Amino acid sequence: MLRHLDQHPGGVKAYTRRLLNALLARNDHEYVFFYHDPKVLGTFAGHPQVLEVATPTRSRILWDQVAVPLAARRTGVEVLFNPKYSMALAAPCPNVWVCHGYNRPFHLRDLPFADWVNFRFALPRYAARADAIVAVSETTRQHVIEYMGVPAERVHRVYLGVDDVFRRPVDPAALEQARQKYDLPERFFLFAGSLYPPKNFARLVRAFARVGPSNGVHLVVAGGDNRFLCKAERNLPEELGIADWVRWIGWVPQDELPAFYAAATALVMPSRYEACPGPVLEAMAAGCRVVTSNRFGSKEVAGGTAILVDPESVESIAEGMTYALTENERRDSFIAQGKVRAAEFTWERCARETLTVLEAARAARKATRRVWSPLGAPVLPRD
Image 1: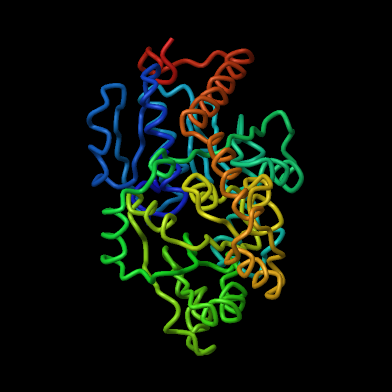
Image 2: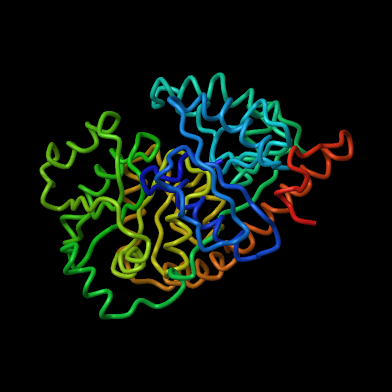
């Protein structure tokens, strides 16, 4: 189920594309990719083991709950997998979906109404009906078990991966090109990712106001934002009189991001909630210092290789940023340890472990009820 493949280039879309590429690189299964937008057809035309099917509908609910189940039955799919938060309740086969975090109990006031409804009513139903759920971190796995009441044996932790492009040294020419293209300052803290309330951007800016300008360090924001939810955060640098010290870059292509990490003084990401923060992993792999939160997925992923701060405290965040500016042996050891830690997170591992979950869901369903394919031959997996 790839309804989200044409959305903004945020974390879930990046996860999906890289997971699919890693699955296809194995070349040991056949797949049907269901799209909502016919314009996406042909995205994986170079892969003979992929059948691409577009089923446009007027609404997302109709696509999830009517169009996809019918298409799955028609094509003989044996396991239906959605790399995002939803599933087809009427699917004729086992259902597996990915939970990229469950922050509703912690940030009720920050959720848009549609997201609140989804978390309050839809996700618990999906959780109850899913044959298996992939959780992107142990933090997420425990939250799914605790807050959605899913038996532990049906929730599987599978970490996302880090592209090899972040592990390779950045060519000086590419670094200089990025500096000129984006007018990057000589020294800057980096915030990378989508901007919305749980990212804690207001406290980050207030902490930066105490540390950055006085040390000649800018703040570069690489990513998108929901202007309706983040209007106050967007206006805060001007209110604090530091607008000239903040650069809004927007979404940066994946192949250009390593230059940002290479040039940055540190990645600063003091989110109030993260499930498995990709930018933290990318920065660690690239040898960039990391300042992040001392809780949830941020702490879990960092694994003791980052400067951890209290996201509720502007003072703590400012202290972490100040520490990132200092030259000392312990801070530099974080960089070396971060590279070692990031090496554990690969897309090959993510694909392998995800496929294990899908195959187990198929086997468990077959053990209790024989699944018949309308077209005879199974689509996933190929025996």
